[in-house]
Length: 266
Image (cartoon, rainbow, N blue to C red; front, side, top):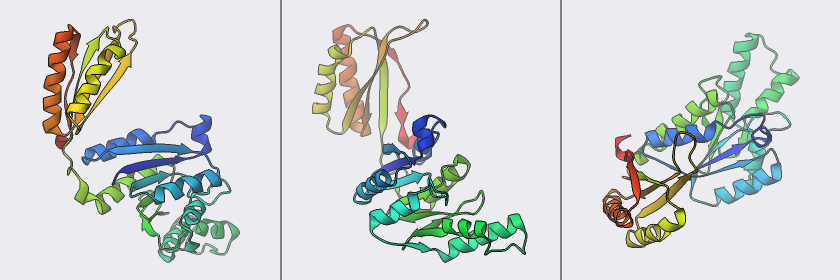
């Protein structure tokens, strides 16, 4: 079971707004000894959103979806989630009550709940049948959970505490269960093609380890280099690391150390 992230909104794809959810969700997961397996960005197109959700609902993944759960014409996420599941939208009684509280808080105790703008607001409590609520500490207008998918607004001030609540409430039993270690170093003035045979040999020898390389062309202050590393099961990482360092020494490679990252210490 993996964690995934869906970011919804034309404003991200057009560049009007810069996505902030991806790095924050990675951080929220890492703090709990978890990691993000994948992320996708999709615009405000109902067909694409529905197709994406139909695919992710069919998986066993735990998915966070940010954006598009309002009630304006460009908000389609609630409807698309229902369509992808093949269920109707249904007004959630508790969700409606929370929105009513919010209306009376902002417009006064005598607010006309039948006013067109308030009827429109109540639509934000129409979720796929069978959904449960995600509390929103910012303005109490909830998100929703259905089929291991957790839908929150696009506003970071709302979305991030809501995602943290989901993790701490529903998935605390998964925290820090998978011990993972990452170790890397810099190989200076090296070509990736020259390092590839070593990377392939390490992955073949240690199946619980992934080898990675992050090349940099350098700049006025930094020479060209590759961050070369191993990550995965701590026991195999330590053995793979030793082999990697030995082979780099045999190659005469110039290396610089970096800090190891142990998920168990986060």
